[in-house]
Image (cartoon, rainbow, N blue to C red; front, side, top):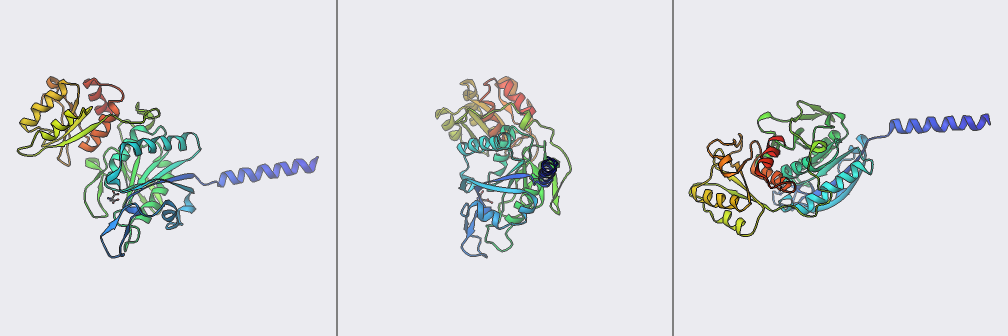
Length: 350
Ligand code: ASP
């Protein structure tokens, strides 16, 4: 009997020891991008995104196995210029299952940089967990001289295992920096140092495999978001119209004629329309197609009731969101309401 008790105590101690030493369980979901891209020669800038699979990405950075219990899955393998609503819905639902039902401690998503900011913001509004969710990509293909993908992936895993990255919403991890989903923007077409965090700057950085946070976002996200895609298999259709001098109203008309649910204006200055486009926008809004005014300017808000009388026309001002992120929020807002004032409230909160 004493012998059995002794064995039970030893077994318990071993179990406790194992669980104390257990590494965080991190899932890497691969979607393609330049991080999985291959160029014809390592010195060439001509390449195709989304070529190598998840296991190749993991094998290239064995150091991540020291940080976490790593597993991977391939969701799609595309250049992020081909990202779409269907993949977004799949991704958000999959992350919610992994974090809330399958016991994962964090998620890393490998992703192309072209639309990374849109995917990050979509997930920021639809992931129902405060566990770290971190997107990483690269500007140089996997076989380039000085490829930046491996370091970005290592840093993203370091962020995903860090308690500091819990509860701050979805992050992008590029070039040693952590950027929050709402403010992150791609600013350069080819440089490795392409992502910026808007006027408030980066949210943190990774140094020596550890995350250091500098600030926390003050907008609603993840567990505090009202948007739920669990039962959705498609999203409202929202297009973006670009503003410029002597602007043609034809793209705006085309969206109206095609029965889109909403249109975002990438307006000039503080979200201003060219006069011919303005007339089409007023007609669209009267028909129930929600118009959101944003700006083609890279910085600064699109202000409510400033140069344009939004209250009169029932337009919504995008405030701090650029056109591509305003489109994401408008799509999700339209799953909840068609009331322009409610939608404006969402733009103030998220
Ligand atoms: N076109 C690529 C993509 O977004 C660019 C990149 O990943 O850097 O997938």
